[in-house]
Amino acid sequence: MLDGYISDLEKGDVFRPTEFEVTSLMATQYAHGVEQTHEFFHSANNSLSRQVRPITAVHADKMKLLDANCLKEQRITGGRGPDWRIHFEHDAESIEPVFVGDTIRVSGRIADRYWKRGREYLLYEIEVHHADGRLLIRYRDRTLLRYRKNEETE
Amino acid sequence: MTSTRSAADLTVGDVLSGPARLMSRERMRWYCDALETTALGTGEFVIAEPTIHSDDDFAIANGLPGIIADGMISTNWISGMLLEQFGVGYVGGGELQTKFIRPIYEDEVIETRGEVRVVEGGERPVYVIDVWCETADGQKCTVGQARIPVPAG
Image 1 (cartoon, rainbow over the protein chains, first blue to last red):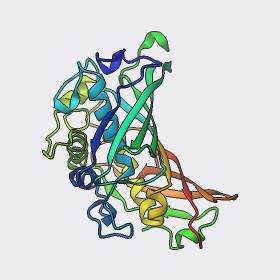
Image 2 (image 1 turned 90 degrees about the horizontal axis):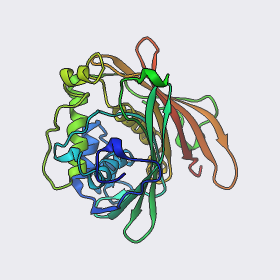
Image 3 (image 1 turned 120 degrees about the horizontal axis):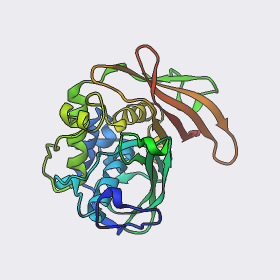
Image 4 (image 1 turned 60 degrees about the vertical axis):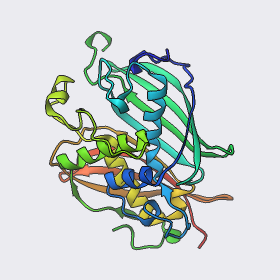
């Protein structure tokens, strides 16, 4: 179910897309936060002659998408849900680089929600398209809804 | 540090490596703030609210023994190793899949590794590379696989 907490999301939920322009700060600050010093991420003074956003910053796209679709838990602005999730799997395929100045559209859905070994998981499938329609990133993300095990489902 | 071979000349069994890094409290904090600054996207720098990655009490309340690193930090260290080795071939055509099989705790020393598992042929040859991060005593924390197009020689 959209518009509640992240823990309310269900298999089959389709997110309302979010669209925004990629700024230099988004690229540099993400790269800086993980000590990625390659010039790709910090200026256009590189072999592509354009500043690139790290592929892994798609993690922030997921967060943006969740903020737009889980209105009771908008974490970017300090919102909190009943449980803290644990990221379990990241799978990002870069089709083309995302450049600073690009307007991108992030869309996605809950591909699955299931229990395994006493823990509940969400599987996200997210795509990042350029505003002109080109697919830039295909992303799958698996997250534990909460760290504590539910002993009853063991 | 990566392989001493060029990106076009790697073969099965070649090993990639990144620097050993200590997972400090500050590094955990940097990711929290960078993630939220990137996601907010307004130009403001964000100091993230307490999380399991930055606040011991919050982590303990969520069933953890203390703060743990966001899995995206080790993923990014792997990503950086691939970028150093493959450059444009990685940012414009690579895939990186990682799983977080063991939490990384404060002050653990983490090393980043890769090993070329397969070189797939065909019209667009691809390296399939096992990637992982491990503690100084060899416990794997983050494991996965990368697929990177083989650059034209």
